[in-house]
Image (cartoon, rainbow, N blue to C red; front, side):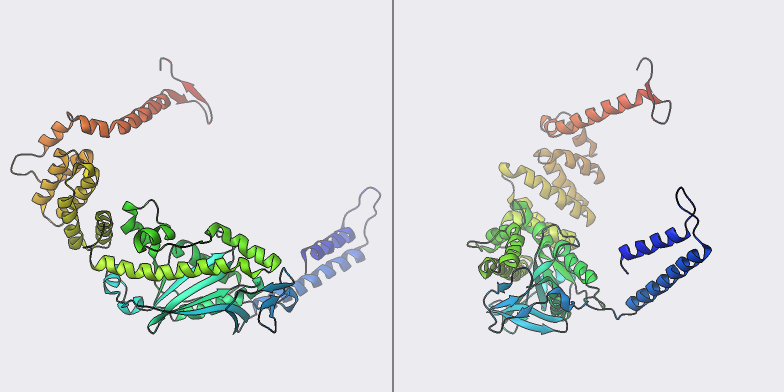
Length: 459
């Protein structure tokens, strides 16, 4: 029953059983009884309909035939329905039948020359090597970039290892009533995955797909394999030397891959809506190419991370610093100490004093945690004497036992006379003075009511 019909029933019932007013007589008791019985009958019917809906088996909701379902053309060159009367489909797309209807898919197989070894990466991440040897690379193209319940993934690119190569599939939503079929097909691929690999997928792609499953009343839900977000690794290892960690930045600076005439991600939703309106397949081909490149770049980047974690001999010093930070965060402290020691000995040039100070502080903390107090104190004193990170070094020094030269407070006393240290904390002192003046102003008032303040005399 529609809300409008329900309101009309209430209005009729109120008119029959309402009280007297100007120009209106009392309704007869018989009329009131008829209205009440009619409302009761409608309530019983409404409850019966709700119970019938609740008793339906849960699963993907199948599209209604009246919604204009998509049907392939006999020649396979386009689809009928939706916005445009006839929409041309990009080349090499075929129709895959699912229990919830057809869905368009493009398949491709590419030779892979990598050895597939992921032992170092699996050890650092705490994953089983067998799981990481069966990765499923995932990337989506959506109708919007902000997420939310109104955003739909109209293309899902997946890739996994198949023999000596990589199998790439791209599921495409030619009409919105095919979403159940697309989600079902993607779920079948996820069931065979050992680990899900994405780039910012933990924050965007995966939650978006889970939201669409809820909107489509999918039960049971997809399996939840371990999720490896390569963006997290990229930030820990490559962020010190890169302006940002966007996938294309990583491709150019780390993988030496350069895209030619790539479609910006911000233009992809507009291309899809243009295809829905006009049916021109040429506007979709760059979207397929962009999604394909994203998925394949993740496969290359995963192999690159394995090489970086296996050996750091050919890395940029800043990448070695990021690698050491990553190992430290994962609990591999002895390996991190070796990396920090190498960086500490190689960064004795004046132009890299700030980086040297950061390396020294991290090295000293790990040495102190390992019980090597003397080595930690030596590193901190050198940080102080060379004026690289003097203020944090002065904080860390009292935590180490005094050395053979006497108590550690001697260096802290001399720190007050160091002009370089004063330069480093000038802004901090300025901020502290501003906060202190605000606090004094606040204390000069007294509360005399819920929203009433009065300044104290003489303040």
